[in-house]
Image 1: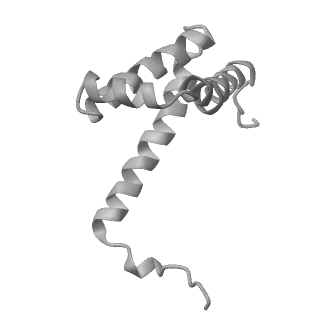
Image 2: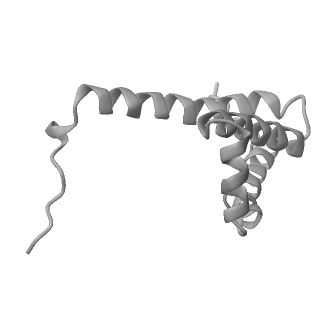
Image 3: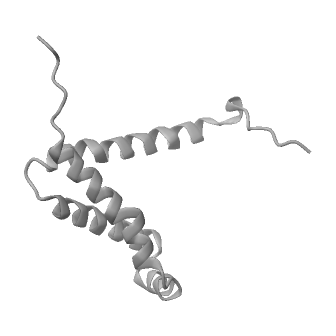
Length: 106
């Protein structure tokens, strides 16, 4: 039995719209980090992003009751959140604040 990769032609219009939306949101976060890092400390940006994501997650989880059940069941959630969100985004924002932008040569 051989597995074949799905054909690109099979992706419907809705999947392409979702992919484009995801790309815009993902790229937009780096753009806004680059702007925000000029005015705010690194960890302030990361904490605010995390707080916004947590609020959206609570809405998606149908309110606080369902989210509390998820948190009770996930003992490793703080460690997972730190390793997959706080640490990488802190380093990305820190890097954006310390690497000078590329300027075209005259």
